[in-house]
Length: 407
Image (spheres, rainbow, N blue to C red):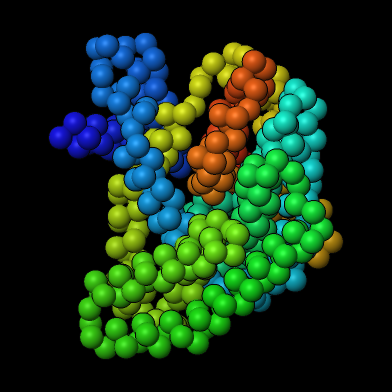
């Protein structure tokens, strides 16, 4: 019974603060993370008076629920991505994505390496910093582009295509990071080559099934007019792809993304797409995602703002400059006007949910527990990266609004 009371209280708080954030034209995730932060502060200062806050901080049920939230968030990111429209600007998107990965990755790694103390996990923590800096959150980016009616323009499709590539490459880099955490060493050439081969094998299998097999199954279910069966089938595909990804040495979230990616209107039918997407969206944003974002907030330490302000300022600055330079310059080179090239860099700056997913996975893998907590940067790196992901997601639409005003 206590578990249900705890989750009920947390869900109420996340929904209230998430709605407040949206009324302020900010992502709901910002308010939901704030709910977790507030509860963490209550647990720290008033744990005796408010015991449920302490229980939530240490709740294994919340961890499992957050994992399901991660699955659904990444699944929805795949569903909301239009592969056919992205193919139209494949070359441009790939060039932009390459710059958007390489520049922030190297800049983030160099920044963390410069500030972190010498330790066995310095390399892993620096690589994590670079990966989170290089990520672009597809759902957050799509929402911003829709707000400005740019989603179906050349600019919008270049950004969405590049964001998709960034996430896929980022998830591959996550696999490298997990191997580094597990073994303590960077994969050698043979191991790295094998990992690349497994990635290609995974994409080959999932694309083949997504293009030729799943649409036939979905059409069969569509004739039965049973939305619940279609929802179950799609969830099973996501879980199966996740198991395939895990068996090939990658994280299961890549499987969830690919399952959602090929769930398209032309392949499965308009009715199936709309109804199943509505169910997934309602379950995810109505319950699971708020609990996931709150779990991130519960791990956030506000003392980071006092302990490492200079590092946090550099982190935020490099997060924006890295994406604007890394994406904007290639966008200029492929022929976009200067103003649009700047918009590409700003639009690609959101780390949002995908950044939080990567951080959560690294946290659950024990990276931050193994790190040296005698140094303030190491102690507060997780909180610093969470803050960077929140602020870039909040500031990007404001900057884009200034650059691309409506009307």
